Length: 120
Image (cartoon, one colour):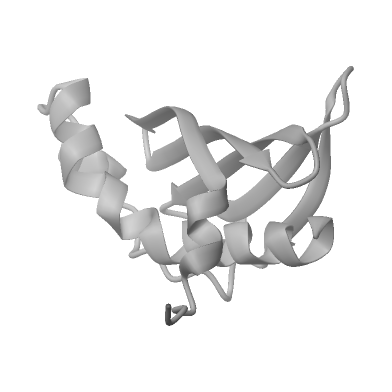
């Protein structure tokens, strides 16, 4: 059976996913379970702010007591589009989620690949 470059993604199970709007930002939060030799929890937090330097993409590992930073993508290297927080003021939370979850996909996969490489 042939493997693809994204086969590692099958090792992750999403437990919760939220995309929410702020006054001038959109935030992506996802908690995942990763199973290799043991089950581990990971959390991805990404913020797309209209002030670029306040944007971030981070992945954390639950150590049993707290979330510890595992890796991150510098705000100048993220792939999500510029924030549209101001233009989302009339949208419901569901509309914000549906319209914006895909914009974070490439950075989500990059963070998961980095976590996979670190943990395996």
